[in-house]
Amino acid sequence: MAKEKRKVIITCAVTGAIHTPSMSPYLPVTPSEIATAAILAAEAGASILHLHARDPETGKPTQDPSVFEKFLPRIKQSTDAVINITTGGSPHMTVEERMLPATKFKPEVASLNMGSMNFGLYPMLDRFDHFENEWERENLEKSRDLVFKNTFQDIETILKIGNDNGTRFEFECYDISHLYNLAHFVDRGLAKTPLFIQSVFGLLGGIGGHPEDLMHMKRTADRLFGHDYQWSILGAGRNQMSLAATGAAQGANVRVGLEDSLWIAPGELAQSNADQVTKIRKILDGLSLEIATPNEAREMLNLKGGDNVNF
Image 1 (cartoon, one colour):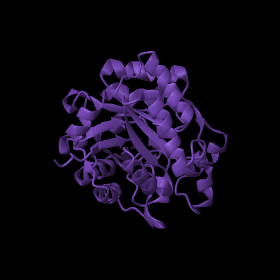
Image 2 (cartoon, helix red, strand yellow):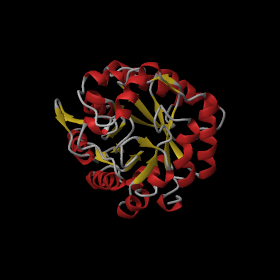
Image 3 (cartoon, one colour):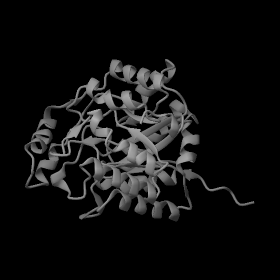
Image 4 (spheres, rainbow, N blue to C red):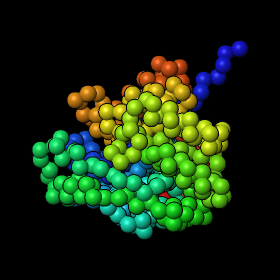
């Protein structure tokens, strides 16, 4: 009897807060651009759409719910993909500001950073000669002396709000200590299984992008959580496809998107989020893996369903 192929959840992070409009002409900025990019990514095979918002005039990251309100309904009406709203926002925002959209819209999934960390984006200053908006250069420069604040109190507050709203979490773990922080909240009954653990590699201030780093994260998660979690791989920048492929071959789900990398190949900008989804699908197909549909992802993560959100 043929063995059933394992289902892989593809998350697409559509725009994010790391990259700036001057870095790529293909980065979605306006609500219309974000909605179109998200819908095309879902049509390409993304079962989860991870969403940030930007000021449509300057491209600066914003957590203003009124901006999210301009694209969330359109995406929901056009696709059955799971919508995942950021609570990370930007390291330059307060936790209260970062929580506003997820609190208001009660999504099926919200991201949750599992520890405070240095968040160094300033090396990008050496890679780009021109910035259209002054905030772009300022944000990168300020990251030399920036702690992305996610204290135990911050995490507890976000967990309680999400639990009350029926929202589950994409637990973003940038280092080994973040897995132990998550285990702490599981022990307290605040983080609910099955966990959706997004292992993040290759950002300055977090764990590196070497395959040994990936294996260290997996061994630790296996020891702490056993079979009570779904594992996913996020490789930043040039690590995106290689680490996703390595992780998928070892049982992981994957995350791609222009939030995490602007590139589709060395020296070649991705022209859309859908391009990256299509590329990772080809890799997964080569590994004889099947793509989870949105409803299969909902079942795997025990989500409340797309009809039970507030948008």
